Image (cartoon, rainbow, N blue to C red; front, side, top):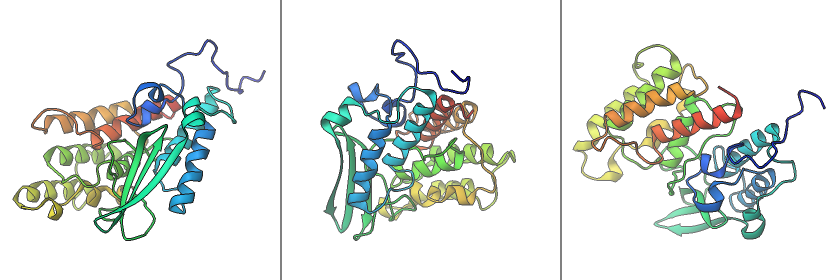
Length: 273
């Protein structure tokens, strides 16, 4: 056998491969299952059928990215499917609420992503009002090594409708500094915009009028002059900044720290860092 051929682990190593629980906020048996190619294909088909596309950074692309890594490691085969997907299926459901189109995506009955769009347009990631996550599930942008910018854009999906506060601003600034390597927050950059929002939001009465994470982070990759693959050290800096500036000294579920940490874990398992 060629040394370049991935070796399929023997004995069912429970810690090998990217599990659903590594990239989605799921529980019980699903969390321990390796992402498999036919799971991703099933979700892609469901998204295309309901949304007319596979959204960038959505559940299907996350599943595909993780399945590709697992296949390269030899953990799963090209035609593998988890028993949960085979027996319970995947689902992309839509409904209307308050003039918005609401999309929820699930694997085996557990929600792995959700979006809300105004009118009848297809759900997609982006700035507030275009595509905001309505679940607590972290969504990691697909790719061969997730960058800091992509992790920030993932936060726009998972917590896009959260008003920016001081802990968010601190985490975004820490992420920006690590991405650019410049050692300081850039004037006019996403860190500065987040800080301005955190300063102004407490004085705004209605939450709907406040600046949200989706407003600041929806196009983070385009606004960062430099970017880099997320490492554990990057994630530690971002988590520390968010926790240090949070009144409860804890990271926000699905927030900047959570998305960055999840990206770092995925990158480490994929061998990207």
